[in-house]
Figure 1: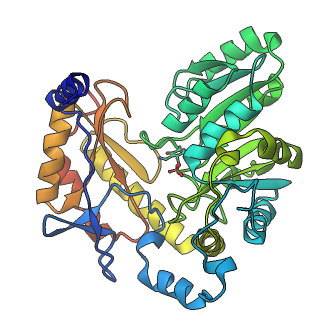
Figure 2 (figure 1 turned 135 degrees about the horizontal axis):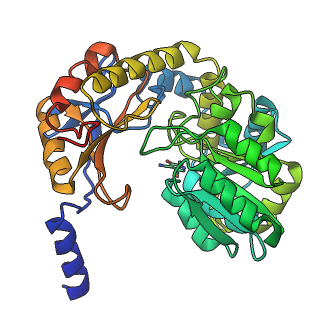
Length: 399
Ligand code: PMP
């Protein structure tokens, strides 16, 4: 036993912060909503990012498999067997990128193996010495890690505090060659939104660029589900728009929409693209299939908004604090051990909602994050407000 690791693990356990891998089995029963089986019980899964329910849509998966020509390894192969810069590239990857660029009306698009790869690979490739990255403090860990890898100067502004961002731009803009503002459009742990209009005003006022991570908005917002920038009619104003296939698109992989020149530059400089094995053909094929299908899922998007709004309204009636504005609804519990205990209690009520604790969220703000998906019905979630009474922190700070 290594004393150092043992001590650290015990400390995490004592604080109620130990993370463990739990093998949930997706139940995937038709009409059962997004459920998982755990310890012999079927639980409603409120912690997945399968926002359109496509990951559990058995008929959709079967249709893909039926359409798939299993004898054609260019479509159903499991091995890319090398980086895209060697022999792992394929016409399918280019086809998917062209399709994404066409739909986004972007000059070009580039695929990464995941959103994590995209965020740690793009920022350090494009921004280095003499540049400045300004990042929202609540941006995802992959963005923070991208900042760490970059040689650019990095400053973080308070979450959604565009006055502070304005102050930083005014003070520092002239000292740097390039300045980029980095934000999520829908924040993953707070379920609130960036003010895209304001971010763009600042971008233009200070001749900066905008890097927007639409991980949690893709599939959910906009006429074709392209995200918040589409919804606001601002697609052309975003310089680097990142989307991931890992959430509403029920797969793995990610993309960035950018100019052709930036795409060429990333192919030559982005280490998380260059030095990793490409996504296999079967995944690229599935990604294309899901992406095209997702564009037409407006009925599901409307339903998702409707039940999310209703749930947030009922939580607000119970005076819970900080409920966000989207299909991700955080409910603050505060203490790490308490959120852990209550997560167990929620399972007794048939709900799987995993505790979110520091360092994923700031100290003292442990919470439940209710991730609402389009394959849920209101009846599935209507008990949540009463189950959460006495657990959530109220808007006035009381429990
Ligand atoms: N960006 C954001 C905002 C995210 O929430 C996540 C995943 N939680 C990622 C990027 C990483 O995406 P992926 O899961 O595809 O690696």
